[in-house]
Amino acid sequence: MVPVHLFLAHCISEYSFSNPMHLYRNKKWTDLAKHSIWMLLVFLAFSFDVLFSSVGGLLIFLGACAMHFGIDVLRVKNQNQWLVEGLSLSLFLVYALALSFPFAASYVSPYFALYLTGMVCVSVIPTQLFRMLGVVDRNATESEGISERLALFIFLLAGQYWFALIATVAAFLYRSFMPGLKPTKLWWLSPLLGWTLPFLFKWFIFGF
Image 1 (cartoon, rainbow, N blue to C red):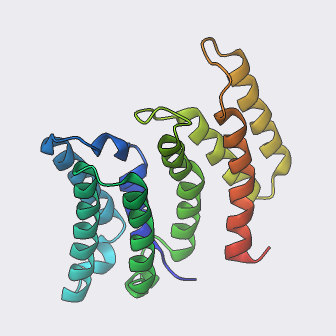
Image 2: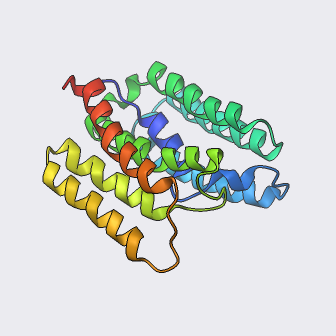
Image 3: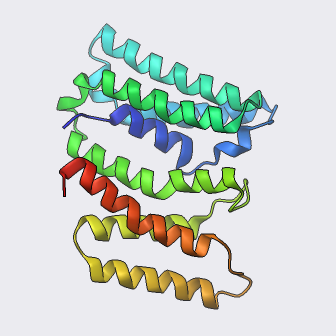
């Protein structure tokens, strides 16, 4: 199993607990500095035990941070969002796979890192896609959709299909009876991805 720690750290610092769309056209470099501090802490959390014991490991860490920062600079300079977000994911996936060898002995096991990566790919990355497509406001957190897909990922990978169905129904009822919520594409897109992506993840990784 190939460790994907660097890709996981990038996705968490980029898309979890933050909205990268806030950086587009944002000329306040203080906001970029705050985001960069968060990014450094996340990368440190997933690499401190394996990358700081050698010069090569330190260079891998610094390279990852520099690449992440460069992507954020492209956002501030208002480059094409589809190009930037595509580079954000594809470059880090290649980087993480190519330089995965130090993480085989990490306290965050490769298996657990892969599981967390699946959670991120099912929950917060679709939210970023929804922002770019205009399904949700570009400044929105869209937290209820994230929670729904996260719950579905956990239940479906554990084979708990009844719990997954209950979570889907509960999310629908919440949206239906919550005052002020009006039907949107998110009402069917979120559960559709919540059911589809975990099965794809399970198939690609485990072969069933």
